[in-house]
Length: 487
Image 1 (spheres, rainbow, N blue to C red):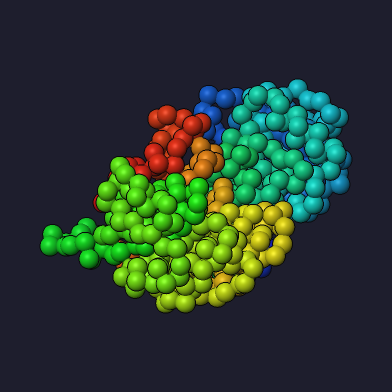
Image 2: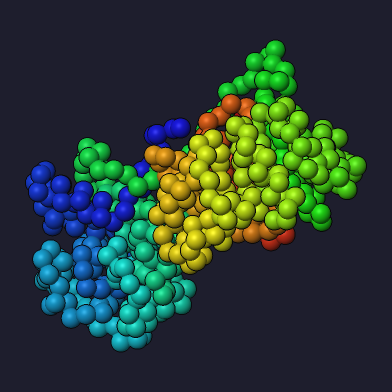
């Protein structure tokens, strides 16, 4: 797995980095605050170069201090400036109070927000920052609602106010930013859960904190990056690229296993077989004769095809009846690498099993069943959830959703491709077909899962860019995926 991807940290780790910078490297907190405000102001000017008016909303902590530094710089640069506060600024403490007083001494003015404000230009959100861990209070909620309804472009300092910086959950309500300027390092909560609807574009400023400081701290996750595949040897043959056996397609659900099989073909597997109910096999490969289809009604029927395959995929259209249980039991008795999805996961939830050589791909509802909790618990901290899944079931676990998470025994990767057009039937079937094909071609569990999730989302992004998100079909991704997997 590539380890040069950008690292993500929780708020507690960022605070530890600040502590090291201040106390070990003698970088005063006031210096860091001035650097933060300057970074935000510079990002604002770069993003909106013709803009000369700013409306700033400040809260009670260091996030407000960053805002007052920005305000002072804007004042000196001749911007028209309106500043609203949700507290008596005299209640600010430490460095935040210092920079507020400097702003006032420079001729700045501050008005108390009372439910309404005259907002114009670029709105700067310096209300809550990274410290929020409970639902937004009423007065702050009014300010957030006002910001979101102005129609003005919005810059959030460090994290959009109301968004949990660790989990990406909205705590009641949150600012919808066009640009978020974050500091020292990237926060986990900016890349998963609700974050994509609120963060806008992201700029990260190190504030001149050396990389050696962060190197002392354990990262929580990394952003996934595309893993390049090597060119094939000129004398290669189909046996070099693996045989995928996809098991599923119970009565009435043949489409799922067909899409998974086609995805494996389009992703480069040398051979792809489908094991499905007898009533399906005579026509399951119509229009795609490259798929080899086998009727399996008992575990004994499945065994010969298990022995021939290199990688097993189970779940698409599987169902949860006795046939499905027999298929899963037979596969678990083998030692072949496996990708498990859909109803295979629901069956596993009844009898949890650890296996080192598989990839599990639950959506939040399936993840909740696998962990014996509620779906809300999964969304409340997706990083904790995917780590618990991997600890319980071993192998590699992929927690699907906006900002899909891929966890192995030592790392969590966060995917940044994909869009809401993927909220359609069959997308998961295509994803696991890609994963199985990449495993069959020799990628590790982690690399196969990470690359599959990345190109799956990237293919959807290409379609959305040219045709829009609504009405996107899972099968439309297949040619795009093939193109993305070729060097």
